[in-house]
View 1 (cartoon, rainbow, N blue to C red):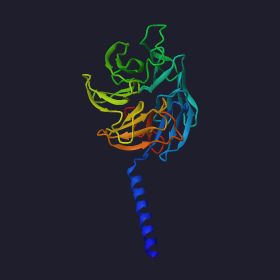
View 2 (cartoon, helix red, strand yellow; view 1 turned 90 degrees about the vertical axis):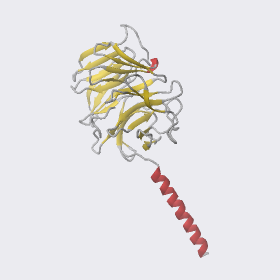
View 3 (cartoon, helix red, strand yellow; view 1 turned 120 degrees about the vertical axis):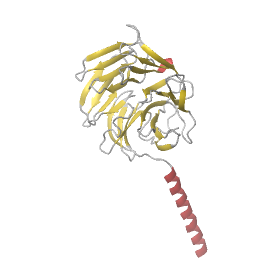
View 4 (tube, one colour; view 1 turned 45 degrees about the horizontal axis):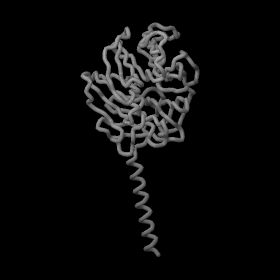
Length: 306
């Protein structure tokens, strides 16, 4: 009997050690972060325990910034809002067009990309327009897929992901096309890296969602394909944050009947090692962008490309 007890005890210890080793090798959440949930129509701040500590309604929210003062700037379907942590609205813009892109500029103005109207806007803090660029002829409706994310670049140009046209375009300050990157799969987000390369998140239009880095000549120099990460399948790549060490934090939108089939977000190194992932389906449905936060709720990397 004693021998049996010792055997059972030893077996339980081995199982316990095995489970602990498995847990230790499973990359869990490491940071507090802010994110959008497109399906639930909500902006969240998630603690480093993986639970929400702040939320605010935002229909079809697709783009999000946590500002240096801790306020959150995000799109709201047909508008853009800046909201304090006390949930006071301190900036608001509304349009008849769908809006998926917003950005607070260094001069305090707010950049907005209107999808249907094809309008690039810069608004002063009081909401008055200081610049308008039309990418479509007057009275032309580009439809709900004309534009997703867009950014004003440091050189004053604009980088626009033309989701339904399978291309990313760079426009000058007057709206003239300077360059086009044709890329299948529905580009959702595009940013210009410090190297001059362009990093693009592609959706599921052609069944091959991916992240692609393209150099100035149009050559693909790095990419993350649909099934390259063990245990993580790319479903519909949306937002990302480029960390100072070169790592990428990516959001994996789980719409189109993909809910529960992959993590919402994860961080990878450039050699495609997973650092951590977030996959709590009890809280989020379809995450579309993310920004890492420090312990005070402000941006962990204020200058990170996002």
